[in-house]
Length: 136
Image 1 (cartoon, rainbow, N blue to C red):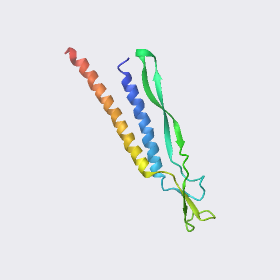
Image 2 (cartoon, one colour):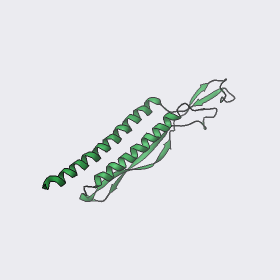
Image 3 (cartoon, rainbow, N blue to C red):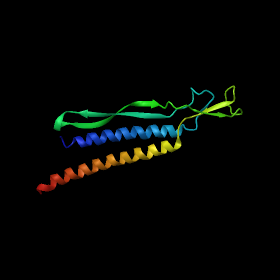
Image 4 (cartoon, rainbow, N blue to C red):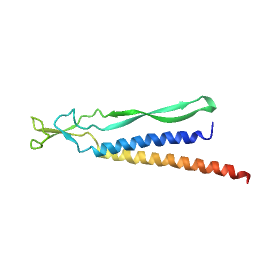
């Protein structure tokens, strides 16, 4: 295996976690959205990832690719509030289905995974530099 592939693998992981963090930030920014129509209200979004495996045998490497971002299938939260300007004819408004606890957990997890990939890059770089200095 080429020693420099570790940079590609960690880089793809960092890219995936960056998409995950951006999606979580979007969900948190829109969590208080309301609408009179359950089809119009903001729904939580989540990225979908795929493992990439390149090569065969001892020449094999892996990485992560973002397949896309999908909307949550969970129903929005209906709330009776006839005085709200967005309320429908029945007096209901619909709130986003974003779960604050789940999003905060996802944000912490993505942030730590990103930091781990940065540490992999730094450690690999340091080890390669030490290897080069062995002959001195």
